Length: 255
Ligand code: PGA
Image (cartoon, rainbow, N blue to C red; front, side, top):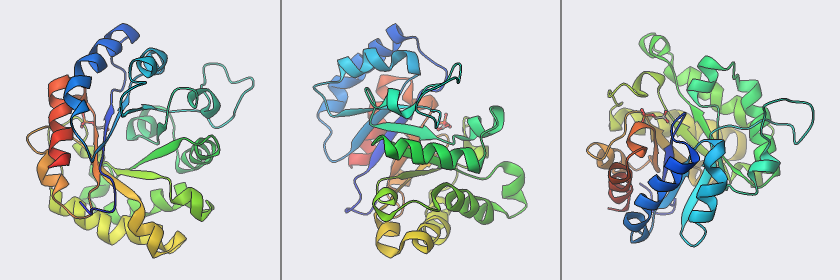
């Protein structure tokens, strides 16, 4: 990890935990997280738990994020949640997770709109990109990821671009227990993601933007990712649902 980029470990809870369960889990994590310095820590519970968790963590340095949002601020969009609503509780919002792309019709275009709306409300968009298995096997990973990054970010101004976080999550590594190799991730970030950001906003932004890895990260394999110079942290699914394993991953990021 490069020292100038603050490491970030984010938990993506997906469709898990009621508000009551979420409160309990975060209460369990807080003592272990408190002593860990030099790492930004973030949990992203379901919408229904955001208010309860935000009160619980008020006096801690744990950050709160949502897992998705809609790009309009308000209006006749039944069932949706806007950046303006999230901004009361959250600092972050995950955008374009592969499960949203796969099951809910998210496209590079909708990702782009959401990124803009999040930034307009001072939320940090944690933008997910990554190739699926078929694309990986066809040698298309670089092209797919570069296009996803380009289409999500094109048109932002420099200040906005400096605030985003990117998570590289190869779809075949998510929830499979089959993580990518740290070296391959490092290479893809160095050769594809940073140059794509650099092409849009210049070298300084490209070197300053934090890029996380996601996909079957656990307390046992986390350190090998964090040792890589281009990997600035992790987006963690399954292993973020247990206090011990999430704290363990955050500890690995500190070391
Ligand atoms: P996983 O999920 O850690 O369970 O593989 C990662 C993610 O989907 O963000």
